[in-house]
Image (tube, rainbow, N blue to C red):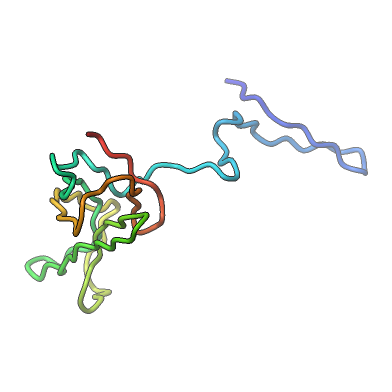
Length: 129
């Protein structure tokens, strides 16, 4: 199989080839990408609650489960939601390659309205109404 490549020519007459990725594979400056850690599946009828699937921390200490806190910060223009592991960090626990998902219902202090939802990384979270 032959992959498309970029060919670079050096001053000394040599060449170097590098795989040529399609332009769509690159992040474009100013482009927002949707959150990969939070997905809002619905907003309540009054828009004062959100049902969300969130990617949680990946550690597991057997019977000594980590405490998982729900993050919710609200401003006039945005609502940040996510999960974080609270309590002491244990380095002797198994670390899963992937985090576990968690279904949560988040109660908002006031209706969502035109506010944007973001995850803890600042990425926008689309809402399915």
